[in-house]
Length: 100
Image (cartoon, rainbow, N blue to C red; front, side):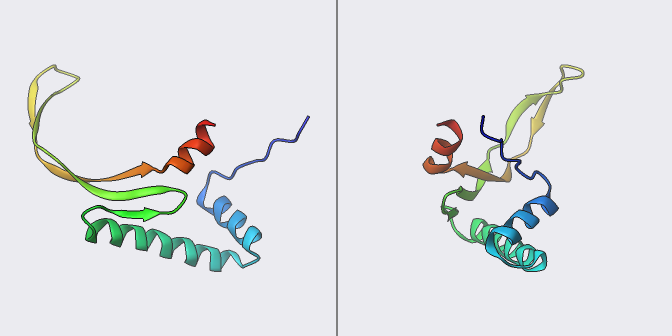
């Protein structure tokens, strides 16, 4: 039976895995990761269509219209204001890798 690979789930674990795989220090891995996140945030803010992160998906800013909602505790109808939200849409390659 094949040994199951342990996937890190914390930022420090992910940084250690990146550093080991790339042959760099953890500090360099953190700097690269932080820059990737910075690029994704800036791209999502600047581009109408968002920014594509190859093998992951598209990060974009979506405008949600105002709507009527319901307070789950009281059942009272409430008005929810329009707002912008960040959305990440997984690319086909990522979906295929996860779902098979």
